[in-house]
Amino acid sequence: MKKVLILAANGQIARLVEQRLLTEPRFKDVDLTLFLRNTARLADLAGNERVTLIDGDLTDPQAVNNAVAGQDIVFVAVVDHDSQNRLTKNVIAAMQANHVERVLFTNVLGLYHEVSGEFGRWNAESIGSGMTSARHSDELLAASDLDYTTLRLPWLNDRNEIKYSVTTQNQPYEGVSGSRQSIADVVLQLIASPETYQRESIGIADPATQGETRPVY
Image (tube, rainbow, N blue to C red; front, side, top):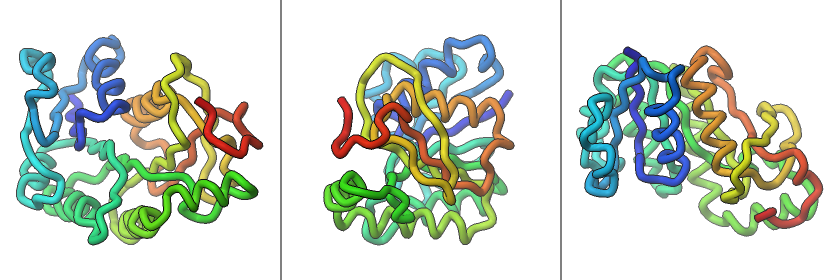
C-alpha cells in the first residue's frame, strides 16, 4: 500500500483529494492518514478501513513528527502564512527525521514576481504581508534535501470543471483563477506519479483566465 498523509485535511481541496483517493479504482492501493485540528469534522471517514484520523496542530512539532512517521507522500493542504514558518519547519524536520522524501506543499501565485500587469499588482496587494512568509516557506523547501513540489495556487472558484495548465518556476504564470477541482486533480496526478515535478515549483490556473485583472468566479 502507498501511504499518503494529508496535513490540514479538512480544507476544501483536501476533501476533494480524499474523496477521489477513496473512490477511484486507480488509488485502491492508497492508505490515508488525515491530520487536522478536530477529527470530528471528518467523522464520515472514521469507519473507512483505509483511513487513519489524527487530531493535531501543525505548529506542534511532535504531533507532526508522529504523523509523518511511516508515510510515503505528504500533502500539506494549507499555505504557511505563519510569521515564523513553523508549519514548513515542522514538516521538513519531521520528514528528515523519518526519512520521508516526497512532499507536495500548497502556496500562492506571485512568489517570484511571475505574475505581471494589473493582476500581478492586485495579487501582491491582496496577499500583502502574507507573501513574505509564503516566499520563505518555498525557500525553506528549496534549501532542504526533500523531493518537494511547491503548488502555486491561483485565486480559486467552485466551478465543477477540471481545466488547467501547469507552468514551472521560470515560466510566466498562465491565468489568474482556477477551480478547486483542478487543483485536486493536480495533487492526484502527483500522488499517482510522484516522480513528476520533483524539486519544482509549479503554477496552476485555467489558461482561459489569462489577461483578466481580477479573479474569475
